[in-house]
Structures are given as C-alpha cells and as structure tokens.
Amino acid sequence: MSVSNANLQRASTLVATALIVTVVTQILYLALLGGPQPSDPAAGLTNADIAAYFTDRWNEVAIVWTVEAITFITIAVGALFAMVDDRRRLGWAAIAIAGILNIVQIGIGLTLFKPVALAGEDYTWMFWAVVSGAFGFYFIAKIALGIAAAVFGLSFMREAVGLMGRIIGGLTLAVGTLAAISNIAALGAGMNWLFVAGGSGTLAALLLGIVLAISGKDRKA
Image (cartoon, rainbow, N blue to C red; front, side):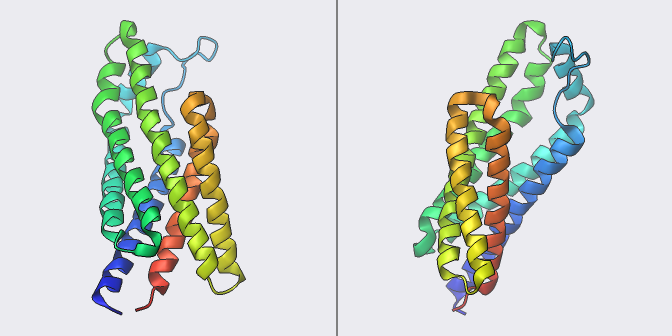
C-alpha cells in the first residue's frame, strides 16, 4: 500500500466514524432531549415553554451540539483531504460541503438559540426565524450528504464483490437519492417535511458511513 493510499484509507475511516457518531448523537438528542414541548397541549408551544427548555436543559443540549460540531469539523477536514481520490471527488466534495454547512447550523444553535429564546414573548418571532435559518442550513447539508451517499453507493455497488456488497451499495444509492430529493422539497415546505427529510438524511449518513468504512478497510495499493 502506498503512502497516499494509506492516508486515504485513514481519511475514509475517520470520516466514516464521524458520520456514524453524528447519527448516534442525533438519536440520543431526540430520545433524551427532544426539544421544547408544550406544558399545555391545548395551548400549544409558548414562549415560556421554549425559555424553560433552554434554561433547564441547556447544559445537556450544549454538550451534544458541541460533540456534533467537533464531528462535523472532522468530517469536513477529512473529506477535503480525501479529495485526492479522483474517482470519487464529487462524493468527497459533497461530504465536505455537508460538514461545513452543519458546522454553521450547529454554530447558530449554540450561539443564538438560547439568547433569543430568553429574550421574551415579544421576540418569539425572532426565535422561530433563527430556528428556520438553522434548519435551512440543515436541509442543504442533507442534500449534499444525499448526493455523497448516492455517489459512493453507486461506486460501491459497481465495485463490490458479492451480492451483499451490491445490495448495500444499491441501498445507499437509493436512500441517498431520496435524502437529496426530500431535503430539496423541505427547503420549500419547511418544517412539515422535517421528519421525512431528517430521517432519510440520517439514514443516508449511516449507510454512507458503513460504505466508507468498508471501502477504507478493503482499499488496496
């Protein structure tokens, strides 16, 4: 194995691990934190509910988002390094873009969500404007990630030895395409598409991480 191939293998493994970590942190966030919830379902979500969430749970939220910020930095840097891979340069570029956009999204959450949430009832509209802006970056990042999953899934499907490898590659291609399309739709439809767009994007990240991990392990000089 040449030095360049060895470094490319390390980059693939690093990015794969970071992608899988982001999937785990998203699942943990939804399961354990979940976002602001209305104290009175009949009244809906109020500014007081939002302020209470970011007051009571902020330390936990900040820890999760900081871990995610570190993983997205790792993803972006690793993907930029791996762009020496001529055959999959488009895929690596898409991963790098996704990582950078997610860094912006997490940065907005860490720096703006709590201050605007605690600004008072008169500024509730601003909180939702900031949230919408953050999710705009989230959806665009998922589009890029979907493109990356489609590129690497197609490559893996073509090069895999055995039926299982082709199935994994084809599934990654299909889910990546779905993630890209659903997140494009979410840019126009907004939060109504969050479940489909976010879910497909998260699954695409998981499958992409698996494909990169296997590809990095099997890459030969």
